Length: 407
Image 1 (cartoon, rainbow, N blue to C red):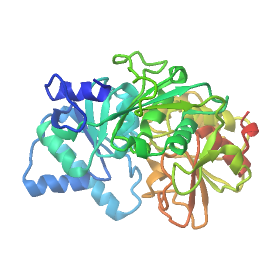
Image 2 (image 1 turned 90 degrees about the vertical axis):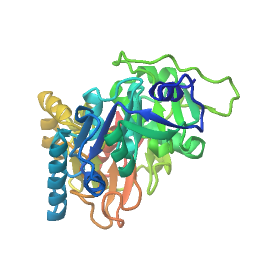
Image 3 (image 1 turned 90 degrees about the horizontal axis):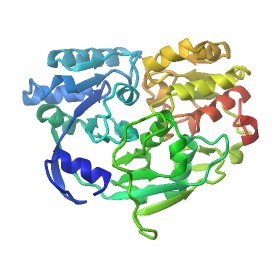
């Protein structure tokens, strides 16, 4: 069986499952975030639910609106806090960080487990071979009450990378290239198993970036092999035979950095095709690229240059742990002295519910996973996607750099 099938069979107390079957499985952990916890609270109230299967295995993360921008959101956050306290759930207060980043740090994504979350990027757990599934409010409520969920066993597709990309090409670039090269159609509601020698060279931070963007590929879940600084792993991934239509070979030999133009992550092109495009807002953060490795790379660029006078640059660490370590190592001071703004850990500007919302006509370069029209709160602004390295250089140049500028 594939990784997804083995995990599902184990949690369904069965010897085997097959793609397409509808099964009920036990879940190991459940988490929700402040953006949809009021809806979940309402479902509890309407149906008279007063208890959950295990409060110690259910978390509520306050990450989407760390700094409440208005009275309406402030009131909703207070309702969510009261709801979580009454049920005795694990509360991750505002400023603790983004749910998916903190869950990875706190060991909520254990290999071979099933975790469901009320956010589509719960799939980040695939970095540690966890079947991590984003679900809607009603399914999350059912999992909270019963400790179980239902799902259709996904088919599996395999992506095998081969070759070594260019020196300044990062995991984010490879994901943008994958979206361009392979698209969503081969992976809709499928489990993806990644393999390749290049992956073995990556840190857990980089592996998490690839796992995080599985949903942009349309996948149900995604599994990465163990990273160089992660000792956990399940059984080795067994690739189908050559020529199997479920197996995709991705040649990343000498792959340059990539950038996604508006308004889709799959609208990706090599960086040099966009060189010189003016940018007046750079956002470095989100659950895709806000980990310590990302912050360190940004600080390395800002140590030698200042943010361009025409650029508004925002840097948002993904968690309190990342923030504190970046402070200890001097990264935060370097970034601030260069002219950027460092905000409290959380989702920040990613989803457009709090600052900084771009002005009409702004061109934003972001390290997020999505650049849909209006994603950051203003449909009259452009959003481009890139790695933290490219974003940092864009901030100091005031325009999209060429690959040669990244040295």
